Image (tube, rainbow, N blue to C red; front, side, top):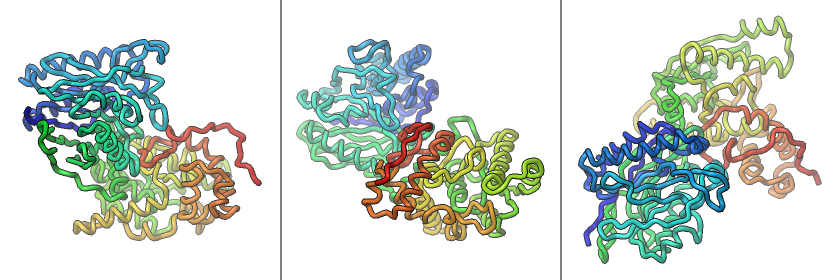
Length: 553
């Protein structure tokens, strides 16, 4: 019995772009064959992109996916690759099951060889938590799938199926498979990579066989897929792994019976700040390109949030495609304007200055707004300028607010909250500073000019909507605020639990009140890349209209 060379094709697909996804599958299949692979495996839902949400229910979409499968199978034969075993994901034919009322399609893995589909597997466990909504749109599968490849037995499952104890993997354990192949569409979040590896190690030991885990890469709406495909051995060691956030073909040999397991390259782990930074870069790049934009526009205030967003965008799509607009008001400081210009020069972005005072004065001449209403007017004029430039020049407007501000409603609806995408929406203020420091240090280590001016990092944050304003006039210090927000939002702790932690009662009551009152704003905020375990949006769904208030003792 000989070794079998297996290629894990960690690729970037786009939801609904069936033709391009199919061409990508063919391209990477050719690469795998050129590397001597007998088997090439692609991620979950490769043909359709993932997640497809209610597109799964459209008959026209299902037909297009089926036609693409046959086109790929035929082209593989035409290219002389009929002997290559290709494993890919797609949407399966509608069916009726006992647990699935009505007719729904399946989340399916197919095996192509010799111009035909030779085996199929329907995902058993359909996640219905966090960002997932699969139980509503798919019918669950029930049958196992074991492939015979050159005398070796390869078990096939899809993503969530390996997360369930006693699920399909336990069923395969009795079938003495030589390898478990897992097709995945697993979104990124901080620390999740270790969870995936630890889980695969458990399954490898349970099966007494290696586990090959292929994951997709790229941005899709508010999700980021980080790749990081890998193989773990029967003994639980990582045998080979792919880098994160890039397309990659990971080639590994399944050893013949009785032979020691083969080892391949191990991708070095990323620093935690680098991992989050690259996730956001990937999310921005995917959203801009897949939605047909070539450039972005954002307000450059000289502050840390807009500076970090601009640096991320320059890394994602190139500084020449970033358009920064300084919109000084009567209260804007000279150092803020200087920092904004300095930033634009450092990252190679376009830069213009558009004072807002004449426009604000025109509104005030008619409305005579006071206090917070007057402050919000300035933000809304800035939002109107950015949207006007977007309409006339075709840029995607970016909102630059962070998770801390979004949590407490510290943004102006229809003002700084306008935009089509919000890159640091899931990054709290403390991490904004950490990511900025990390990015500047990377530049220094490479002998480059740091992209973010030092003064943008060190000066007290301020919206500059009134004389001498700083954020801490109305908010607790950000290190304290972020700690309270993490407990209240990420861990769903109530007022009693927060006080038991030792937080000051006045701080707790203020923060909880601000968070609860701002749900209506968050519901209208743009999409942004999910990088934490619990992001605003799909992860945290609370009613806008609610009279629930945390009880006081």
